[in-house]
Amino acid sequence: MADPPDDPGPAASAITLSDSERRLLVALRDLTQGPASEEELAATTGLPADHVRGSLQRLRSKHLAVVDEQHASRPVLTARGRAAQEVGLPERRLLRFLTDLKLPIGPEDLPSGLLTPDERSPAIGLLRRYGYLAEGVPLRLRPESPPASTPLPDEIALEAVASGGVDLATAGSGSPRRRGLVEVERTTARRWAASEEGRQLPMAAGNATLQGAVTPALLRDGGWEDAAFRPYDVRATVPFVTGPRPHPYATWLRQFEEILVGLGFSEARGPLLETEFWNGDVLFMPQEHPARSIHDVLSVEGVVGHPPAADLLEKVAAAHEGRPLPGESRPMSPGWRASYDRAFAARPVLRSQTTAVSARFMAANPEPPFRVYCLDRNFRRDAVDATHHIEFAQCEGILGEEGVTLRHLVGVFQALTDALGLGELKIRPSYFPFTEPSIEGYVRHPRLGWIEVFPGGLFRPEVLRPLGVRVPVAAWGIGVMRLAMIALGVDDIRQVYDDDLGRLRGEES
Picture 1: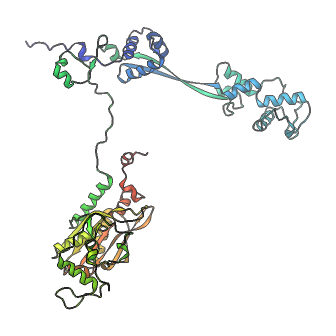
Picture 2: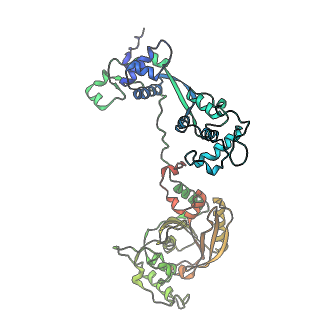
Picture 3: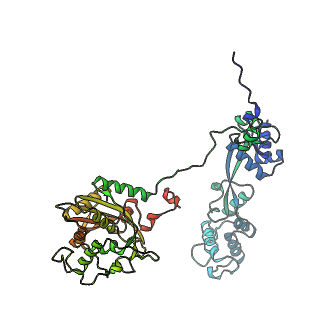
């Protein structure tokens, strides 16, 4: 026969109780006349009333005590009602004055100390309702009015409330509660008893300390062998933890990229710190273009920029100055009719458009076909408002192969609009220095109205030929943050970067 299991003893099933909790639980177990009130338990244990209330609630949370709550309400006099009992209700003071005067009097002739302006009209109205005053002015008692000594309805109500409380529904017709003379006092009577678990719970003897966990110290000195541990209560409440999750904007960006990949595009990356050459020159933006001034592009101090390969630099310089490209006999266009500044081309700037990534890609991969996108950050010196920010994300894309036209670009915009559920798409002509023809696509924001999100066009030859590209290339720079505003239900572009955990969890702050 197998040996019986070792008896764990009382210590193994004991639970941590403070001294006041222990004393109260013992008192609850000793009750013989049914549940006890908090006041009775305070008298039995000698504990302060606030300690009794707190300890009882903790015993209840540990399922060791139960409570029966009885709610009651009764009318009591307010400070205004007590004052009215002392000096008389306004209608009683007016009735007393008119009875003593025995002559008609106009309301405006009443003594100033008799009634306040707020009391005068209600007092007159009540005395007329009770049959003491005749209609109209001057004020005069009716011959058939009740005796002045008869208690008024609200006097009866106040006296009844003051003498012990009655139901206001039977306390007169003058609505003393509406007049602020009476209020309802609500009380809760609690009577406590030990629960079944509380009656059966073995408690550690005396002031023994119960351990909540096996600590390294207990393991080192062997104290765990003689220690008493409290049991694990699976019903105890625990903090609600939501766990980590991606930011809604980051999640939406991944979904947007999945759509582009589904349309056959692959990702390209480029540096955030660029030079004027890749940020603008190679895109056939004139070096004196307003968008390249200090009011838009952010320059970087303390960094030395490096020019591109010499042959590419000369090709771009020739396109800007309206000269034939090296090895060619005729210029592509008149250019910008200004000399090209090679030192300016090496100036370092923060990238203001992801089109720079497209230029770098085509310089390294000029042979078609290619479908490429870059979804990344850009920086501009911009006035921050509901639709503009100094830092913004842009999705650049290029589609290069034989036969590409503007209709293919509009088709990409329409496919993105449909996939994102943006509703109607509107296309209008536009202008950009490096595309011709150029268009802008607009979608409607629920509150901000029509906003421009799909700028694009076909790259000009002055962009493509210096890079060695011989096929038409459709290009765009989508304002993905504005698209995210619509998808996420955000009215202000600054809220896209929201870091308030309460709002991100959907809790209103």
